Image 1 (cartoon, helix red, strand yellow):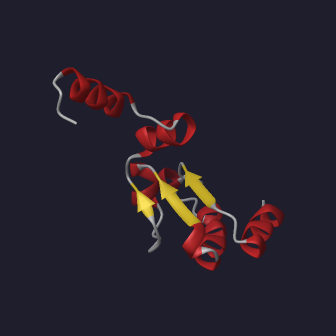
Image 2 (image 1 turned 90 degrees about the vertical axis):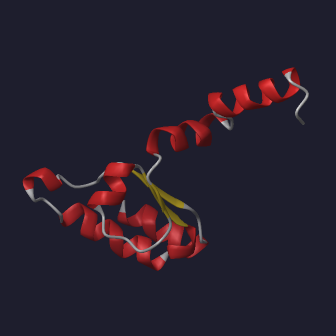
Length: 95
């Protein structure tokens, strides 16, 4: 992972952390501390995703608590609720 993170930083690639990398419930924090070093070096291109992730990792960069819906959006490009809104706009001629 360190090699991959270093490549991301060097090339200014995006880093997405979705899910807590440590077992905070059992007070195991070392994976999170290590990942935070890389996120801080690549702050403009890093994102924390998900409510548990955001609450467990003390990161002052870009973060979103909408984990499941954000991941769905990133993989499918359109959320079902947005599709419904567009469909209703057409149906009720509210464009």
